[in-house]
Image 1: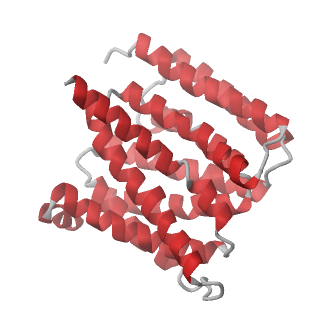
Image 2 (image 1 turned 90 degrees about the vertical axis):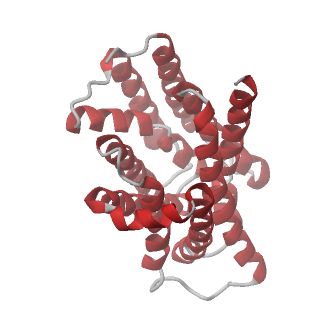
Length: 286
């Protein structure tokens, strides 16, 4: 049991490292956003189909026939989130995208309170308020991002929150199949806007790596690792992505966050990790 738990933590750390490469790939690929989404998405979709077969065998492909309205809603939300995610990486600073994404637990908690009537509790409200103030400081005072890119990042957060609510409200939904379908729909939506300019071997390899490492590998390691860890451990390890993503970009591309971004990011991270630790010590009784 101890070995399985340790193995799960290592797998989650691997997933976090894989996900934290998003900024590196976005900055390294000198192509327009639709082209990046198309080729990154197709590589990720191929990897997810293999993951689906590996984890569930032929039964996984039969899940496509029982998506239902919830599965299609999940797929469309996932596809929209994918489009906004890559778009925001290309349109604003990596630090802004990472920190705005860290507000996801609180956005999901608020929407769950509003739509599913699940109150977040006083600690959750205070943490959400701190995260909101931190995001406002970062976006309003930091000069290293752009408004359109930040809005796309917030849109991505809303799309991801929708995934959480759909999975929570309809647990029978085959989310792996729905997520795989979205990985096909999103890049195909960019097909009319993508360009063939610059599609040399190095850029194609970078986009394939973007899809296979950041999307497929991260997802597969997360699915396997989260089976052997508690939700609190999973959330804490996942929170490292917010800190790691801009660090890699700073080390490789020297994209240095401004002081307001660092202050706002510290507030968001404090709210996120503090709330997770509080929840671990004071679990909600249901």
